[in-house]
Image 1 (cartoon, rainbow, N blue to C red):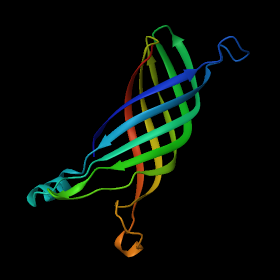
Image 2 (image 1 turned 90 degrees about the vertical axis):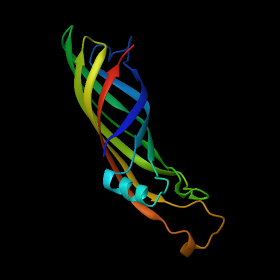
Image 3 (image 1 turned 90 degrees about the horizontal axis):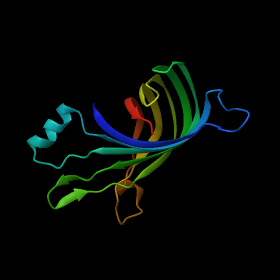
Length: 165
């Protein structure tokens, strides 16, 4: 399914150190990734007039990157990182009987590569493995049979356009 994403990233490039000019850097990033249900599943919810859940992933990553410029207007970059993914499933159900879900946090990794244009724009592809999340309903009971977990493996391909300033 398709979704949308917005994020921020800070990269430290080791200026005024022995690594300056080598293309290495370390980064910290946070993204918000929104995904809706697949169309056929959305249609089933619409048939019975139920509120559809959506999924929001918030990967928070730290890692290393490498960049190289072939000319003033063209370069290459690659990166890899580790961190945590926060998964939020929005409520679903009928008007006065919505089911709410607890946020889930799992270990995550990401890798990406792409091109640099005019030293200010990047185009790239990233793969995020965001873990095996357990989705629990928010309830007031501790009885496991009434609050089963629904496991969800989360992996996301993201094609990104970045602006550097």
